[in-house]
Length: 157
Image (cartoon, rainbow, N blue to C red; front, side):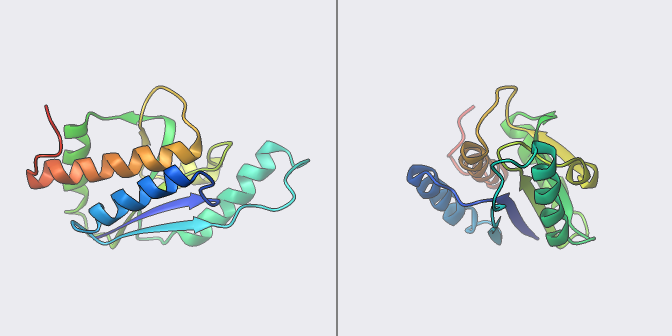
């Protein structure tokens, strides 16, 4: 099964981009993994936040396929320990799906239509992080989950 990370807009911080690249290479040793970055909206300075979220959401929904298992990263989502997340991931790999798509919204979060399309809402923390920092935190956690599944010594209890 392939894992896709769907996000909006380029990563502007070099250290985040480097970190995500590092973990992406590590994840690919376990499973096919791709990061898809949708272009940022243009001329948003005076655009209402709801309109921005809705337009970003429409682009995301165009990318998603009917048979995808969609997990949105949402501050109000389900929280897991590392072992629980690894267990959830193992169970998802048993599904008859071609892809698991993790979705990270833009600066204002995700549109309601994208949240409604989700099979699971996942929270990395009760704290709030920028959408760019979430990219790095998520990539590390995904890699960590695979090391738990494979019994590799990265994660310490």
